Length: 237
Image (cartoon, rainbow, N blue to C red; front, top):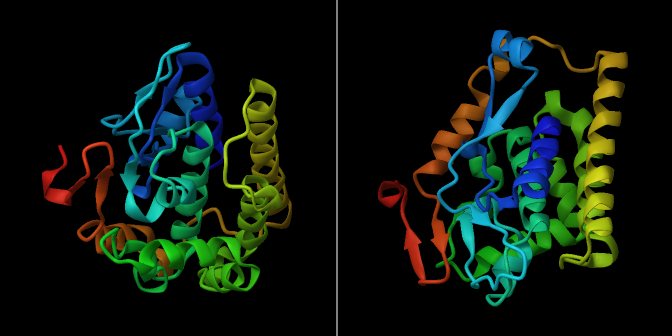
């Protein structure tokens, strides 16, 4: 997740592009030999819903994304522009999903889809209420318990003073990106020094993330709110 937040900032700052569909299926890690050769540890894919941010250009109200990873403000307020902060919030949900033991079961309320009235309410309570968020973190696989603090710090940066909105200004944007990158940097340094997580994935975790993606993928919704259409997995190209 650490290199992806850096890449996402560069994508927005240097190219003026918002991805608008950050999810577990749209983040890929490079193989180690490739990473060493290119100094790249991964990349974002699927820019079908990406938006080009032109100066002084009026945007349309259009929520896009994969249901479990859509930012809360977009779910709660139909007339909101998709921003860089919403993409960062989606990274938080990807981190939580990857760390959760059997995410499709424990985060089931997040994958029911927008036709379920309780979908947004359940996710809102899970993320914004201290007790509920602790329950979410307690669902982490034992091997990823060291990442609970990182997830909490990530959430607190994004939801400072219970605020879900995007603060205007380049300075504020860079401040949030820097804070997010710093907590990931600190976490990596701590894990490397304590060797809490083994570098080699243990046998009991083999396929752990893939199972979570496969189990949830079939029932997830891909949303374009501008037209009111809900796109099923089979309809996405």
